[in-house]
Length: 353
Image: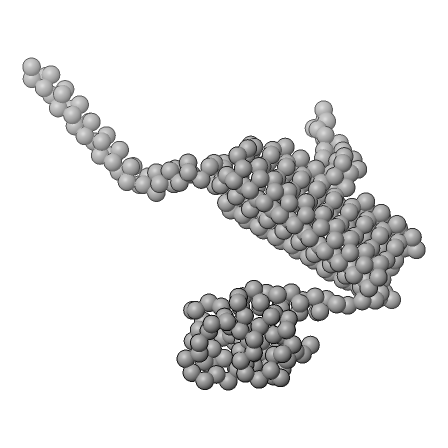
């Protein structure tokens, strides 16, 4: 794909300082620039690179002033970082703009495929599945019976969607993710064995959700496991059965949420966080990395740290004490020696008297 400076300025609403016809066909960091590449300059720390970059076009702040003559063409915008991010999004959509169905795909006769869809090699689409317009399903993905996938959604290679699950519009699910596997439901028996509890619910993922690679979301025992609109899940996350994650909540990698827990909207959860089952997390709660929660967080906007997790103000006080434990240890040792000396002196005085 090739663009001129004029094309790019039109996409980002910028003004051109240099050759409007210069062409680029790749993106690059300004320090790694090369001919026919587009870069951006937003952080003053990187200003020196503008003098030596080999990139053909650089996005800069509208009021940027060069210290010397530049070989590159500048496109001036209000916010170079946002403009570059918008271009990345456009580029990514164009890169994924495939359509058509591979002859190596297996599609049930009862399945319905929307307009401009892409179905890659060795994709399996099962009975009564409904695939919306502009959906992209990349090779080796599996779509189970009665699954519904909304328009504009992308399933990257190796995604597995079990039966009856519902995926909204404009979602992205990355490779290796499994949506709708059985929840971890087993009933203990008198002989110390476990009887499997049938998991007959489903998973519902609303619009504009992104799910990272190798993340697993279990189907509900009854009803639905629900991922609300705008949620962003990182790689390697486990979401248990009947969990509900509220709108626009973001969760970092390697976190785990046990069954039937309800997470509020606009929450931010760090990496390797563990949430016990059947608890409730209020809206706008922030949970630090590696925290472990076994009880409700009822106050919206709380900041929680540690394992077991506690409020940030209490956590800071405890850490302040923890950082001085070695000093306290030696002080206690000195006090014990002083007490022993005083006791010895007292015994000596009693003998004399």
